[in-house]
Image (cartoon, rainbow, N blue to C red; front, side, top):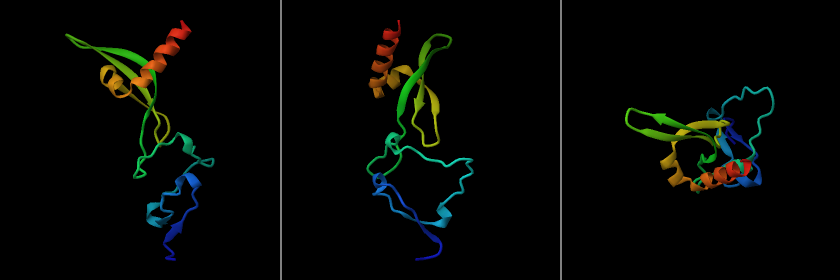
Length: 112
């Protein structure tokens, strides 16, 4: 084997990933403790590209303009870099991810 190639050991869930890399593709990890990413929370498409998905709506806000109001939702995403949050237009987001709105509606009515 070429001395500049590194072979990695992967768990069974990543058996489709090629396990040999050129060392120039690897980056040094500057973590104080071992870094482990739980695979059950990660989603990949059929080409093994990471797919970021919204996990939950954590806040709501109305953006006021001169003649209109725009309802916004703050969304927590499953990001490969850790928790990530974005503000999205509620109407557009509800069309794409309606299941997130049924969760928040049922949990907020149960809390009342």
